[in-house]
Length: 297
Image (cartoon, rainbow, N blue to C red; front, top):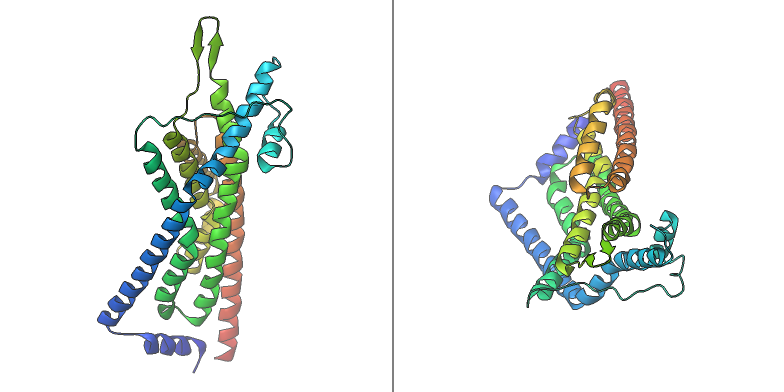
């Protein structure tokens, strides 16, 4: 029995009636819902702490911007913004840190905490959700496909965290400093930024989600390459169109400033190049496997 026949026999042995599949799907969905609910309550209990943590980049930008304005400057050193947000550099002596965000509705803060808890629950429960998805589809995969698919369950959340970290430590300080720099303070006229807590946290979670999903590009393209839907040649020939698409996506999901758009576009172009090499490696492995199988037949 060759490798293809062995794989077919393995899948036939794992097939089950439709009702059994539906029962299994229901059980796995229940596990996912329970995991999400538990994670939601945990995140809601710490919602205030999560909010404070998410506001830290805004606080750093506010303190450095206020210090620069007091000294007659127009901005802060970009590396100082990042270093302060990372905790590698202390705030300047005497820098104001009394940042005030607004809640204009009686239940606005409650709903904001619920949104934050929901976002945190998805992140916290993601390993359980991904594992349940894998266990449901695994019986329909060949042995070599199982081994190739499993690493992506670990790579995907790592890429999501990298995207979220880029937002938190690099983009948010710049975005909030840019927003603060648009204020107008003259004699008799003052246009100040009074940010609502719900709008700020919606911006943060939206950016983190957008960057985290965009950073899944190597995972998606590699899986498509494994399925034979795309090839490294097709991706190489379509590079110029992909770059245009990346620029459009960056313009849509980021605030309207060139720095934020560049912060997303540059990593995505790099990830696209990495994706080409990932698909190329899959093609080389498939070619070697086919040649080895041809020699054994």
